[in-house]
Amino acid sequence: MKIKAGIFALLLLVVNHAHAMRWYSPNTGHWLSRDPIEEKGGVCLYGMVDNDPVNFVDAIGLKKLTKTEGEAAIRRGLSLLETACDAGCKDDGKTCCTPDQCKTESKALIDALVAAWNRNYGRGMYSDNGGDSVGGFMCWDWANVFEDALAKLKPKCVSFSAGVAEAPAEKGADGKMHVPVHWYLKVYACKREKNAFRVNFDDGFFDGTDTSHPGKFPPKGNRYKETSPDGMDRHLGSLWWERAP
Picture 1: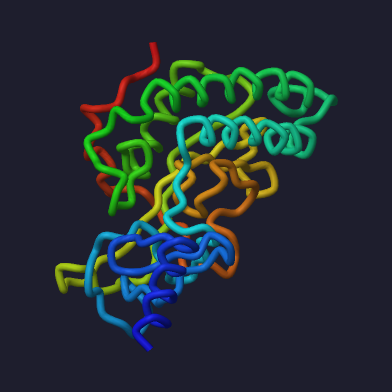
Picture 2: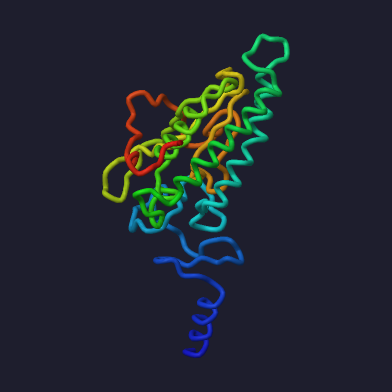
């Protein structure tokens, strides 16, 4: 019996990985035990695991974008902007730019966002281990970083502004009720501020993979709902991020 138990323990160590309070299987892409952090109907027993299992599936566990992954994810947003340019801009002189002019500017816009990402990633005041930050910054900081980058670019074919979404209040690790928020940057082709001509850019933490999202954001069916940013503070950590030159 002891031999069998020893063999099982050895296999557990060889095949899987121990992450603090629970085990993760890279072969199956799943945790071997439930995570009580913010789990619906559960209690927050500890706060050291990054991923949030509420209405979110993190297939590989603890997913956050690296600096290189983030740059690639931002660049994937170019095709979304080009699609928005085709939909929102016209060649008849009734919009501020033609589709081609909007697409040309979109390339410069993406370059500006990538430069801002690379310039600031890793400079933040937060530790990514055990928190919601990416590259040392929270989502509201990245919204500041991206908005500053486009403000310096002064685009003529798009308009942009910060966006924020809230989720229903839930009990946090401190036992108090908190309202989860997510900040991002909204960009509209040819300054036509409708979801059909919109692309959103964030820090990638929302889904752990992408930094660019087309149309309405957060997507329909998500627990987060877009709200007005008026009067909401998003300046924490702002002294740590570097503005566009």
